[in-house]
Amino acid sequence: MRRATSSCSQGDAALPIAAAMWPQRAAANGSMVGGRWVGGGGIKVLHGRLALAPAQYIGPMSWFWFTNIARRIPSRCAVCHAWPSQAVCEACVNRFAQPCTRCRTCALPLPPGQVQCGACIRTLPPWDDALTAVAYDYPWSQLVVDFKFRQEPGWARSMALLMRSAPWVEPALDAADLLVPMPLSRQRLRERGFNQALLLARALSAHKTHPRLLMRIKDTPAQSSLPRSARLANVQHAFATDPLRHAELEDRRVVLVDDVMTTGASLGAAARSLRRAGAAHITTLVFARAEPGN
Ligand SMILES: [Zn+2]
Ligand SMILES: [Zn+2]
Image (cartoon, rainbow, N blue to C red; front, side, top):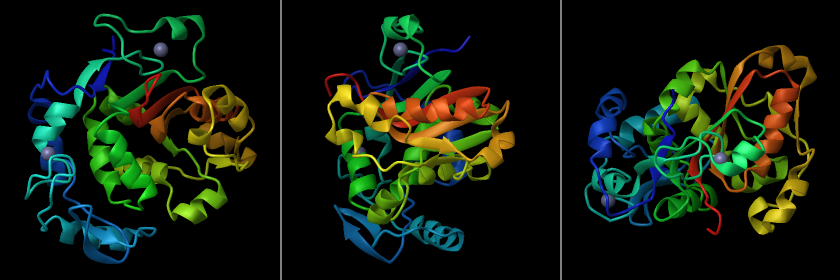
């Protein structure tokens, strides 16, 4: 039976999560969180850290080159500014990424011992499981802003490492046939230059990532600009799957990847599209889960 826990952003009850959960990952990847700055353009100091700018789409060769160069460059912790450090130091991960009990279908925090919240028992979400690495709170909310809006795609690898280290993520990725990143509209992609969900999915499992199975067919206002009540209507009919590729989704286990889940309206609309195309099991996996009121 799964244990419905994932990280909560709590500073005081620090346990050695990184030491306990990350050594094997760190060894496999050559570093702990971060320390791997990738991107387009040259190396510069950005927000107190070494970064590569301007942010561009990262091709496989440049990704390889930058990761190998960047591994050798000391950096500063983005949270406590310890220097030299990984992009987020082990002490900050210990302090701010502690696991807590979470609802297995919406990833909101629950009292210990519970597995599902009352809202999900009354109305099941359109996916089967929901997982998050951290709460959308300090310091992770700022990291997401840096990642997405300040054009720092190099954060994807650090965030993916935190996601992989969260309870139940590794088994979900192993069991998945496909990772499907939440698509951006063409206009949003042009503005941003990259799809943050695609970068996360590729950093989690490049060979399972399929970015063209799910499409965004309607350009909608950013969900963050809308009140909660309007978000559902905003994303209705915003997603579609390619009918010619339904065979690739039929009876498959899919992990739907995004950076943040707020109300879950966008992920819900995307999950319904995947379900209509025949997906057998859908896990939503995000870096950060916003809690009501945040
Ligand atoms: Zn730190
Ligand atoms: Zn729930």
